Image (cartoon, rainbow, N blue to C red; front, top):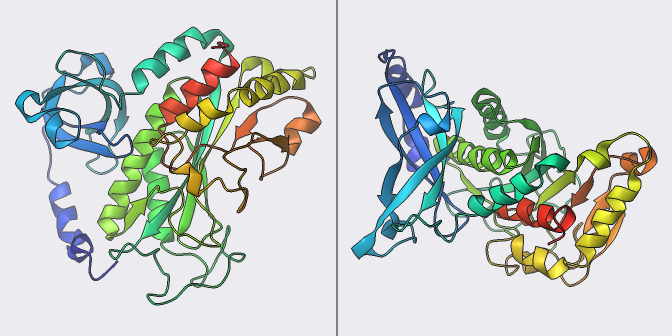
Length: 366
């Protein structure tokens, strides 16, 4: 824990005592989650229910002050929360639930950062193709001075090389947070498929998927919430900034793996992957604008053609090439089936926007 973090100074063993208090069997604490007006941050608030919900449509519509989340004017601030997916709550446990919600304005139209609404329409139109997604979420841990965790206060760690998938106190920092997050995701019902230390010290990655259709966005947003909550307990800050440290340091992305049923079938369907790559090549700018909340401005700092990235200005593709826009894993090229990896999405991307763009380009031909 960090000595200058108020959260880290709190006695967690005392808090655990209160969590052991019995809760009536017919009561449920439901924590509603939604994306605020930045398009990057998640907000939450909790209510008591007199039943245990099993489906989102059983949950009541709620509202919040949108003027305090950059989503409404103070004179007309009520903004609505429409529950869309439910997960087990790894923090309160018991019957408690995490509820990811769509946000709607006073006129019942989606807020500007409600990207799920249009993404769902695309996924429903493409459902016969069974689009699968897996997202590799990179992030960086910071101390309370906004310095990468474990870095010298007045200098820099040694050059990149020993940190990726590293082991040892001089190579990786805060594995406790990473492992706690992993367990919490498994408990909640998130299809987390792995984790590893990344190339820059204090940077980590976890993977969510495979998920079909809209589930990938729901699960990735909830996994981000869980990560922030775990780090909060340890007094550590999580940043999804695509280039948290300027200089000779890797940035952070959200590499997005994508396939359709035709790409995954036996019988030499590599042509289906090649068709998708051709379509992506003709829509490069559109995808760059969809792949970070600032329409490419954040990714400009990351996609430089260095540090295992492609150039933001050019489209490229290759087998096992981590410097390309689109990578075909070598195993997929050899088996002539599988998936493609879009390496352009930024770590702070909205997964709904990313996956909608891919589906509309590769499947719906829009």
